[in-house]
Length: 344
Ligand code: NDP
Ligand code: GDR
Image 1: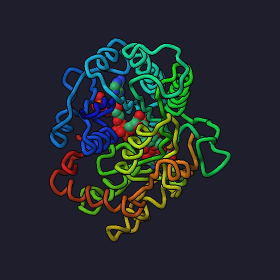
Image 2 (image 1 turned 30 degrees about the vertical axis):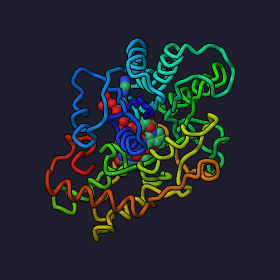
Image 3 (image 1 turned 90 degrees about the horizontal axis):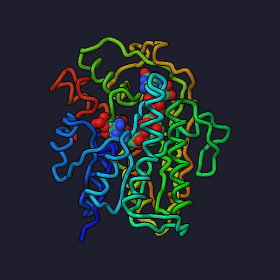
Image 4 (image 1 turned 180 degrees about the vertical axis):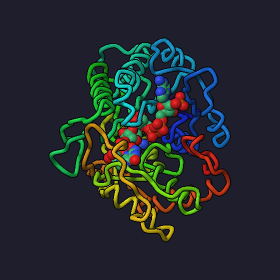
């Protein structure tokens, strides 16, 4: 019998890559979506036909219990969140509810449906749980690179909410012996990335300028450094963590760091343009508190999971710019689509 997975956040970037990966592994895949007519479902279904859909919202405890009861999953991947860091200052309470408390609600749904009590046996309980933790929890770092033991100092309401989600996952593992793990994932990108995030904003901006559809690209802090990888590689890592004998947390990243300036330079030069001729600094895109430097130490994942990233930074940026050049050649206003199904 094939294993059954329930994914929250299936309509997002990672949900689509994870669904594809699990289907390849022979899983029956269910996606939980919110809303009575979520337009993102049609976009997902257009490209991934074999996903089953159930409804539920991370704000609504009862809906999560119903979703888990209905699907009877072997594994739950909690990818649903308000994930755009600047929005977390605009909607701090909602971010805490969805990105933070939503984790507790899903853990409770699993606990209630599977009848888990305080067994305290690590790894017991029938339904395995994956939490999408984030390098944003490290925030203001005092040591680099960052590994599973690096202290957290989140710098945004998003980072604070993720830190709650991380600790409550750990607590349910310790309190109830649930197989509950967190992947502390560093930034990962793809042609399916939402247009609000910096890599996709740049790849779309470069493509637009190259095609004569725009004259400039307005940007925030060019000095921030991130460890950027390819989302498809990170979906594989999520599944590897869930396939271990013991529930443990892992840092996932490439171990390399680049600045936003490096990103911009590479993206423009990939189409034969000089970024200095087009990039305009705009304070509207700077943040109340910034995360200056992130760089993963993925040693544990490499040694214990055998995980390695397959796509490097240059290949990733080139892939995204080329994809957006094709996309814009067909449809000049892709902002209507947060990420673009045409290129799945
Ligand atoms: P996206 O922003 O692309 O997707 C977010 C998903 O969350 C969407 O499917 C959205 O669905 C869903 N969602 C939003 N609110 C709710 C809610 N109230 N109830 C249920 N679902 C909801 O994120 P990514 O795919 O990039 O990231 C996946 C997860 O991994 C997120 O939790 C993110 O914080 C985390 N993460 C991401 C990293 C990255 O670099 N991409 C790095 C580290 C962690 P809808 O269609 O309804 O809007
Ligand atoms: P991040 O990703 O905040 O790291 O969170 P984002 O791509 O938004 O920003 C990365 C860095 O780029 C700087 N930057 C800009 N960012 C955006 N979006 N737009 C700009 O114009 C711009 N100019 C400079 C930012 O200041 C920042 O330093 C992502 C999300 O996917 C989270 O959900 C996830 O947890 C983390 O990655 C790991």
